[in-house]
Amino acid sequence: AQTVTQSQPEMSVQEAETVTLSCTYDTSENNYYLFWYKQPPSRQMILVIRQEAYKQQNATENRFSVNFQKAAKSFSLKISDSQLGDTAMYFCAFMKQFNTGNQFYFGTGTSLTVIP
Amino acid sequence: GAGVSQSPRYKVAKRGQDVALRCDPISGHVSLFWYQQALGQGPEFLTYFQNEAQLDKSGLPSDRFFAERPEGSVSTLKIQRTQQEDSAVYLCASSLTEAFNEKLFFGSGTQLSVL
Image (cartoon, rainbow over all chains, first blue to last red; front, top):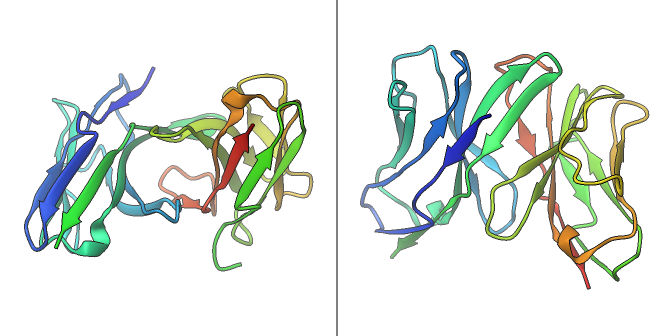
């Protein structure tokens, strides 16, 4: 079974500062994808960043970057120069492919508040 | 359409009522997923369609839950004889293909409250 754990239910950060959200996962698979999704109050899940397990290089998207440690099964998200619009729930997700299609497993989320 | 559209945005039902939740995926998207998100939790998988075929319904919590996608586009999630534990946000997501590296696009969900 695949599990995704986010151990920080809530976090806060001052505007313009840097914050890191933690995520660990458990799987016996070798090839999979990892994602960070943002869910603002509008409820729509928005893809922040994704990482393929085979790629050693950490993914980066503008102010968002990950620290992917495959052996430790850790996938943390770093947000640099935090902005008020970053306030949202953040979900870490794991995806593997079954013969019936792709399957996603989500963590319980971290509520991030950016303080002006 | 421009994005995944779900309706209604909010639904209040009395215990025992039947409800139907609609999902309009992005036009041309082959894969469609339904997720249930309880308060304070992450989304949990309910069911998956590839075109009109329901390939995986292992996440449906009981036989009161039924999903269909008869023409391979719009999907409906039906819950019969609703119970209070069915209260949650129901999210729909679609992707262009079933390929492993395909991106998933989510709708804004339907918040169901069962009184």
